[in-house]
Length: 292
Length: 189
Ligand SMILES: [Zn+2]
Image (cartoon, rainbow over all chains, first blue to last red; front, top):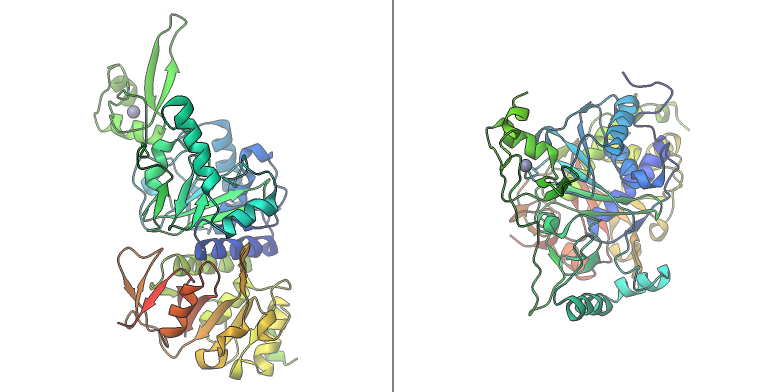
């Protein structure tokens, strides 16, 4: 049951129309940041109010919503947002990536390949990839207009000069359809290849900064790099200790105060599904946990 | 205002507009795909699909231009009553609605500014029929290629050359809609 004190999905119709128009313009100009009049939401900015507003504008009563925070469905942030939409929109929720029609995410792209008909909504703290080079909005707009992205390359090249490699490992800038440089939100660069040519619609919402941008399906997205230092998506050189996956993004978990540690999939749904299917990692007890 | 103007709106706006928006989003995000838009009954000559788009996207903040036969008392009253959108000349419009012929010439419409390409018109072009045949579409949202029964190719090809500026377009017929964002490359089949 929805809470009748609210409009469907909390936001009033006029606000949703405004956000929907911004989303459509974002789709029409992939990677370009469309300004929108962000509304106060009943949660703090750090909790992804931009993503929440985009999700609210997209939800229909037949949607199945999944919310993840750093790959996990069970963090306070993810649980709160999921409950918020259950209460205000009465929609079904899931933790299974393939069952979801809308997935709101903070800082990860699910490991399981997305499909046609799905929408991935990113919570974005700082939408402007040029912000740390140029604090003035009028100037960054000009740089996007003139495709003046040289400074961005200089910054990445300074990384190489200092560290011998591009040290940026999150928030790694991309170029969309050969035109706009875009901030993919603080996903690990391991996830960057999944931005390109996805069958799903990808929408990005920044609440405090009041920007919406988008990637239609099958859009070409390239991580910035250099001929002599090609982009390399990286992850910890381990397999998941619980499910044995060799190709998923891992979190390092401290297991005791003796320096013990393990590496586990950051995508909790992916890891659980693999364990349920009988995959076992280095710490064999995981199989027992999975069969609970 | 005629009494008919009060009829034909959404009966459950939050849900109907949510469903309609998702169809519009899918249409624009996947050029060449056809989607149903129902739930509104606008006066002729406006199609059901165009009427649903208007109810879903237009309000007092979005000036609308009605072109040709669509610029009649019944349609004007219906849009005014249901959305409050100001009816304006082509160059001031955020949305423009009419047959493809009536929407001409296209150089009247806002195509955005170099630093704000989003400040551009969205055309709602009413066609007699909409099928997945005709000019070839490629670009964002399209895996390999798509076909769409567009009224011409030249205007869309010209529009693509201005990217990231340009108009975006929904084409409608009866209760069907397809989307054609400015990013789509349109070529003769
Ligand atoms: Zn795992």
